[in-house]
Image (cartoon, rainbow, N blue to C red; front, side, top):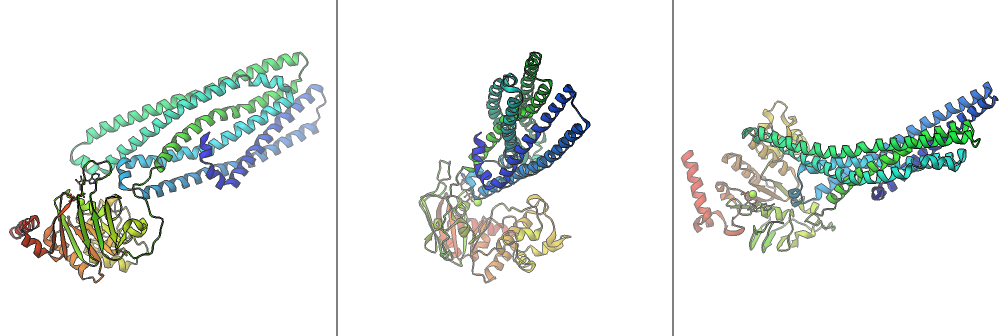
Length: 580
Ligand code: ATP
Ligand code: MG
């Protein structure tokens, strides 16, 4: 029952709703006790021959009125209870989503998308169910059950009641055992569902690669195997589920048999009237639901517990990057100094960056190049605090960047990542993603700077063109330029381009760079690129080699230095000349 304790914060927040709900449930339980008592009296009147039309009419009207009252009360508690559960689901999903937005990339390395989605759907649903049906079965099994038992004792004495309740301890013990089994099996079933979700998510998002490599059949086989595992895990749950109802039915049957036999003997012995036994039998009928509720309570609570444990362990994971609580107002606008002793990714055994000192001067255009895997993107990840490390010190305007809150820090940078990411929304919405209130004129201005305006107006719906998931209906170059436009719209001091021009031809790349340099916004531009031919305009060029700076300086100095830069630059220039 620890789940009710764990969800206590929610019940406390909505105490009025839940108090009314419990009150209504109690009133319904009490109101239900009245008709059997009225009927019992009528039976006794029939037996004694004292029944009149007036008393039948009066009793019938009273029963009808009680029925209407029960109808209204039931309606009320259902709306309140199930409404509360839906609200709990909303709050839990919101918390989960907030948690996910604060997690570092390392967390996403450990958890797949499908698994995270399963937590937000299946597990939250199981918890919602506990907050609705769990509360209902708890109140009904305890309060309605106790009310019926007390009424039984009052009407027919404790002997009859004990006879009726004899199978109850056996049933409680069995329920307890089933619940233990259900907990572990339900947890396995939820995990299997997470894995299945992962497979579907990967297959659907990678459908182009799957088709291109003709992997349909092997993917089908993997999916079928995972489906079977999920089915098997759910069958294990169903097997336990299937034991609850029959066990309760048998116990109820034994109870009815015992009390009827004992009641018949008591009437025969003159210890009880026929009317009392009628009332008792109807009460016994009323006890069936609390008994089922009791069994169902164990079932629901264990499902909710297993899911809440899964969710809590996910939400309990701390980000490797601790956000600074201080909303310092110190300016971030200034030089950026990297002072790195070394950096190793969490869980990796080899350092990717070695001793490295680098200053990005405010307002300058800095080019970073070097072999693939040399640590260029890693530098940006550290700058944006996707990872923290004691051996890494980055200062913004002389202040350690860990002193700023993450929101404050990240809002100063506009990153165009190596892989463009677009949302399934219109082109205008995609560009204005970081500034949703931007006017159409602002959107068009950045689209022109990113050289994508002419492409956009060629589409039938122009800026209102709906993009498919991840922008499937665009070319690679169009996607890149849209993400560049999106970054330009942000109110950032530093533009970070991580190989963001690789799908564009050289002329377009040069035009965009010229637009940025001449737009007069005095922003610092950091351009990571494999194409050196556009770096001759850079104020400073840094060449990385195996996590260290191997060359740095202006274009002319590096050419004169005759190192990796000069070699690759000459080779690329030659390739352009021969192809042109
Ligand atoms: P490219 O030009 O191909 O984009 P890069 O210079 O940007 O290369 P990085 O992405 O910085 O290279 O990666 C540097 C090294 O760090 C690579 O060897 C890579 O395998 C490793 N690496 C990158 N991300 C992780 C990670 N999350 N965990 C462990 N190692 C990583
Ligand atoms: Mg990279």
